[in-house]
Length: 166
Image (cartoon, rainbow, N blue to C red; front, side, top):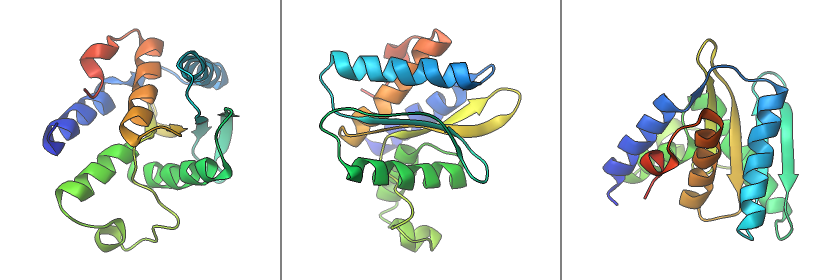
């Protein structure tokens, strides 16, 4: 699928997948939903859900069998990108790919601290704005992204097939 079409779908996801409220129980439901989906599909992933702030507040974390410490490092770098730009990490990466630019060239920030690969999605609360992130690492980046979108669709009772990236 052309990058511009993917970016349009992700923009729609970022607009429609906004939560009416978010608390520790919401984080737990989302995290256990993603974990259950991954286990049922025999996927090896890390799931991280956190609230932004200084420092960030981890609310849910799991690493399934087959993951490595590298997954945790990818998660950290993707979270940094979403926390800074308030966009999904996959959208940021696709925009760079579309524009044929590197992250460092575009933003003058170290790639050692930021990753613009799919898997981290901003938690947007209707009354508060972007307050955190949901991250999945371990699958190809498009699948990481789609797994987060699937869990948000389930939480919000939205049709996943109409919002997922094909």
